[in-house]
Amino acid sequence: MIQKWIGAGLVFAGCTGAGFLKASAYRREERLLADTYRLLEQMENELSFRVSDVYTLCDLSRNFSKELASFYDAVKENLLNQSADTVSKAMEIVCREGNSFPQSVYEMQFLLGQTLGQYDLDGQLREISSVKEICRQKLTALQDNREDKLKSYQTLGLCAGAALALMLL
Amino acid sequence: MYCHWDSLLDVLPSRFRAEADKQGKNTLQEFRMRIHKPALMVTSKGTISLKEIVTPGDLNFVIQIASRYSPWAAATMAKGYLTAQGAHRIGVCGEAVVKNGEVTGFREITSLCIRVARDFPGIGERASKLEGNILLLGPPAWGKTTLLRDLLRQISKQAGQCVGVVDERGELFPKANGRFLFPLGGNLDVVSLCPKAEGLDMILRTMGPTCIGVDEVTSAADCDALVKAGWCGVRLIATVHAKSLHDLKTRPVYKPLIEKGLFDWAVILHEDKSYHWERMKL
Image (cartoon, rainbow over all chains, first blue to last red; front, side, top):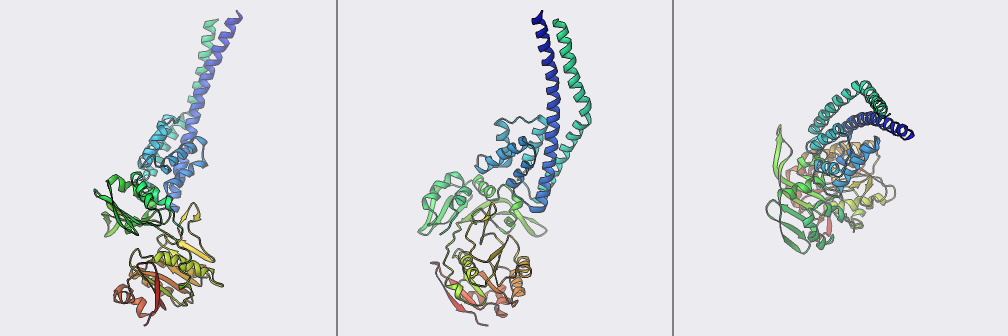
């Protein structure tokens, strides 16, 4: 009987944990997208004011989350050691080597990588601005649905856990 | 002698690096790349043709590395050159993009000429004893910039001197990671990558110089800027493309400098990098 109770407890904890993990992944995606949006904003400002190079733009990521900073550090490293001859290739390499970004965040980096270092100043600013707009839309969608989604993931985890535990008992 | 050799090798496609490195920084003067032709190395001992054929990818690689993957930061491309890390100048030829009658960049690059930048501290010591405004004369690649750099450095070490430098091409006193790559000397301030007219005005108004140096006076606008800056109680030191004083006087673009008697001395460079000076007469 004790074994049954322990099993039910573990199942309940597992399901609840899964629900909370899903909710925290949602929060992480939102945080990374918000960071990406702010990074794009800083890149735009840095470019308009100082006309800085790609390396300096990559360095701006250090003002944000560690994940974003390590991604751009790796991109910069690939460019510096010449293992990629364009920014987009450098980003591809970093993504292939094991990047754990959520799909939407990865898409933003990919879109930026496709254009970075390809145009003159005006063209580059326009490209960053259009990626920023896509990022803003995705972020707004995540923020609008945040309360409902988080509640449903957590509730679903709890309920599924409770139901399975009851069935076991 | 200072030379940022690693920066030069970095700019070259990897398959050319070993050959260039074999020549070394004392011998290699230029590395030339022409599309679908063998790469050429111009050395102090003669020209060497390499076996490898230059591809469009090689040319793009050089531009990408030299511009730090940032075409917007390499605005000088529109003028047909860009300066790589280590002050190595890369001349560019190809199909130009023209907007409103002005070249804005290159659609396709067909030739590159990479010139090895070197610094020889001490070579300007003799000329630094001259008083008044000095014009350095010499054809391309005869060492005008190298002499100007050291001349300015030597003057900046003299008592009571404060030297301002307008380094439009970023070749005189190049920087990387916030540090100057060649020794600065004494009392010397540099405004980099700034057009001469604006740079001269800026330094004159704000830095209280006793002497101002500019490299490569090539256009009427540059001459006008020098004339405007002249007779302000500040020494001017500049370089121009001319083989002799006679050549200089026959070039219409330099007429304002000659007619107004702006410069007191012409320092004339020789092919072997030595030089002599002549007084400039009105």
